[in-house]
Structures are given as structure tokens and as C-alpha cells.
Image (cartoon, rainbow, N blue to C red):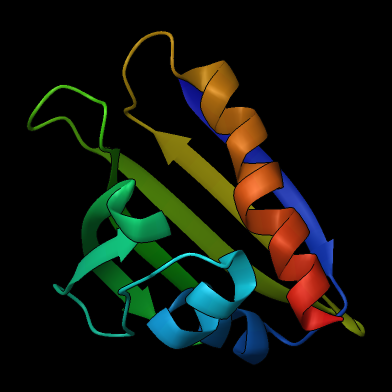
Amino acid sequence: MAIHQEVRFKASPEKIYAALTSGKAFGQITGAPAEVTAVEGQPISLFGGQITGRNIELVPDKSLVQAWRVGAWPSGVYSIVRITLEKEGDQTKLTLDHTGYPNGAAEHLEGGWHKMYWEPLRAYLG
């Protein structure tokens, strides 16, 4: 089971990376409380705690890997979220690979990435 999405934004990889690794910026993007930093090993809490996890690997302006879970999932169940950023002319290609989530969660997660992440991020970036 894996979700693979490619989305393009008219913004630099640096601006997108900063938006995804700053609690203040992420909160502005989504309109919900967020705790996330650009520090490996640090816990994350997004959408007021609906999503929690930890930063596993961060390569500034290029990629981030997080252990990531929805609060309603069984205790101790985490998935892996990998986001890579690649400059393409005046755009950035963002590639998401999300694996290890519980059976039956794919459809909800697939749409959730667009609705809760990519659409608000696009609006934030202008």
C-alpha cells in the first residue's frame, strides 16, 4: 500500500520546505494549530493534534521524512511520509510517497493530502 502524488507549485523549494517545517507557517497555511520544526528527531503535531509524529530525516530545501499518524489509528501505528522537492524552471515539483498506513485508510489519506495540504499550500504561496 502506497500513496504517490506529484504536485507542482510556482514557488521555490526553499519556500515550500520552510512552509512545511515551521509551525507558525503551517498554522497560517491550514488555519489550525501546528507544532513542527526543521530539526530531526523533533515531534510534530499538526491540525491541532489530529496528526502527530516525528521528523525522521530532513535535508534542507530538498526533502523531509516523517513518522506520521492519524489520532484515530490504533495506538503505536505510524506510517512513513516522504516529501521531496525538485526545482523545475520557475516551479517546484513536490513528490509525496506515503506508506505503512492501516488497511482501509488509503482513500481518506489520498484525498486528505490534496484538501488539507496541497490546496491550502497553493493558496498560501500565491
